[in-house]
Length: 68
Picture 1 (cartoon, one colour):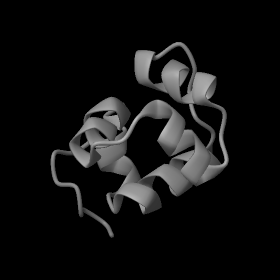
Picture 2 (cartoon, helix red, strand yellow; picture 1 turned 45 degrees about the vertical axis):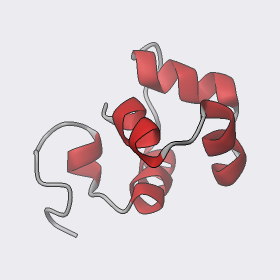
Picture 3 (cartoon, helix red, strand yellow; picture 1 turned 90 degrees about the vertical axis):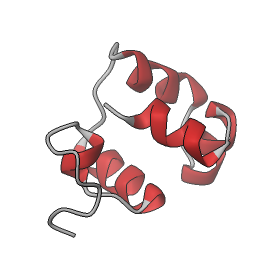
Picture 4 (cartoon, one colour; picture 1 turned 180 degrees about the vertical axis):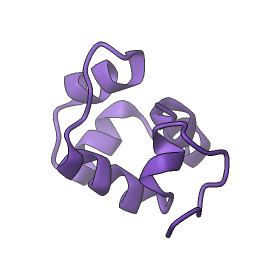
Protein backbone atom coordinates (compact mmCIF):
# COMPACT_ATOMS: atom_id res chain seq x y z
CA UNK A 1 0.00 0.00 0.00
CA UNK A 2 1.22 3.50 -0.79
CA UNK A 3 -0.01 4.88 2.51
CA UNK A 4 3.42 5.74 3.93
CA UNK A 5 4.47 7.45 0.69
CA UNK A 6 1.29 9.55 0.58
CA UNK A 7 1.48 10.41 4.27
CA UNK A 8 5.12 11.50 4.04
CA UNK A 9 4.43 13.45 0.85
CA UNK A 10 1.76 15.38 2.75
CA UNK A 11 4.24 15.95 5.60
CA UNK A 12 2.14 14.48 8.40
CA UNK A 13 2.88 11.91 11.08
CA UNK A 14 1.07 8.64 11.64
CA UNK A 15 -0.50 10.19 14.73
CA UNK A 16 -1.75 13.23 12.80
CA UNK A 17 -3.29 11.00 10.13
CA UNK A 18 -4.89 8.78 12.75
CA UNK A 19 -6.39 11.80 14.49
CA UNK A 20 -7.69 13.28 11.21
CA UNK A 21 -9.46 10.03 10.31
CA UNK A 22 -10.42 8.98 13.84
CA UNK A 23 -8.24 5.87 13.64
CA UNK A 24 -5.65 4.34 15.92
CA UNK A 25 -2.00 5.29 15.25
CA UNK A 26 -1.04 1.65 15.71
CA UNK A 27 -3.43 0.68 12.89
CA UNK A 28 -1.81 3.24 10.57
CA UNK A 29 1.59 1.77 11.40
CA UNK A 30 0.40 -1.75 10.67
CA UNK A 31 -1.20 -0.72 7.37
CA UNK A 32 2.09 0.87 6.34
CA UNK A 33 4.16 -2.21 7.18
CA UNK A 34 1.67 -4.67 5.71
CA UNK A 35 1.01 -6.35 9.06
CA UNK A 36 -2.68 -5.51 8.70
CA UNK A 37 -5.01 -4.80 5.79
CA UNK A 38 -7.50 -1.96 5.88
CA UNK A 39 -11.17 -2.77 5.42
CA UNK A 40 -13.18 -1.22 2.58
CA UNK A 41 -14.53 1.64 4.70
CA UNK A 42 -11.02 2.59 5.85
CA UNK A 43 -9.62 2.31 2.31
CA UNK A 44 -12.33 4.66 1.11
CA UNK A 45 -11.57 7.16 3.87
CA UNK A 46 -7.84 7.04 3.13
CA UNK A 47 -8.36 7.44 -0.62
CA UNK A 48 -10.70 10.38 -0.06
CA UNK A 49 -8.31 12.00 2.42
CA UNK A 50 -5.38 11.83 0.00
CA UNK A 51 -7.58 12.49 -3.05
CA UNK A 52 -6.46 9.34 -4.87
CA UNK A 53 -8.24 6.25 -6.13
CA UNK A 54 -8.34 3.08 -4.07
CA UNK A 55 -6.52 1.33 -6.92
CA UNK A 56 -3.66 3.82 -6.61
CA UNK A 57 -3.59 3.38 -2.84
CA UNK A 58 -3.36 -0.40 -3.29
CA UNK A 59 -0.67 -0.05 -6.00
CA UNK A 60 -2.90 -1.51 -8.73
CA UNK A 61 -2.18 1.53 -10.91
CA UNK A 62 0.35 4.33 -11.06
CA UNK A 63 -2.33 6.88 -11.99
CA UNK A 64 -3.59 8.45 -8.74
CA UNK A 65 -6.83 9.70 -10.33
CA UNK A 66 -7.79 6.60 -12.31
CA UNK A 67 -11.50 5.78 -11.97
CA UNK A 68 -12.15 8.82 -9.83
